[in-house]
Image (cartoon, rainbow, N blue to C red; front, top):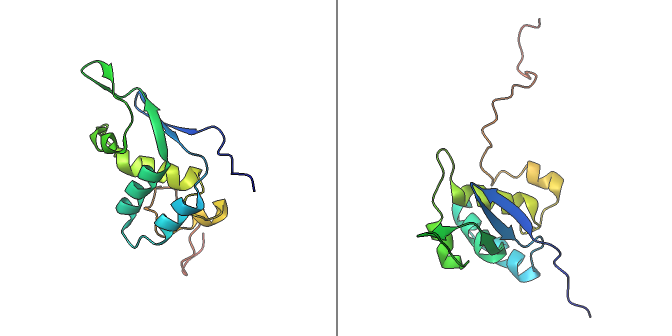
Length: 129
């Protein structure tokens, strides 16, 4: 049996840093997420711990901060952004950690709404134009 190949990491850009994410979860990774009964933010933290493999561009006192799961907590939020949630959404949608197919992810009720204000056709009964 040959071990699976993971391919090039996916890149999540956040401000001036780039977070490197494994493109494919292992069966162990998916199992940990599947058996987690926690809320969405906690699942996103778990996914980040399992899937992030490095970064570029995070500094402290002008020096590069080496990646470690503990340092994930020290990435500051940007104005009107939440690092943990945005990274979690990226991992959930761009990797196979959830074990779902792309079409299923679009309808995943466990994910927070993207807040789209796009109006679609009304399905409500009533007057027609």
